[in-house]
Length: 73
Image (cartoon, rainbow, N blue to C red; front, side, top):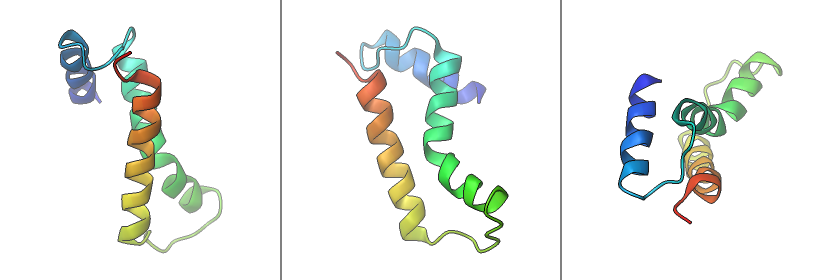
């Protein structure tokens, strides 16, 4: 997580992200991408690994939501 915090800080310093709390932003980024497959495994008992296309979709939509919240304004 520390690496994501440092990346967020650097992108904010360059004016590419609007981040006032880098650790929180890094946690948001992490969970926007990982929450669906993790919930499927832990809460629904789905032991099958997600399909690559699904993982790509989770990553793409997670990035879109993250940028909507933290993108340069």
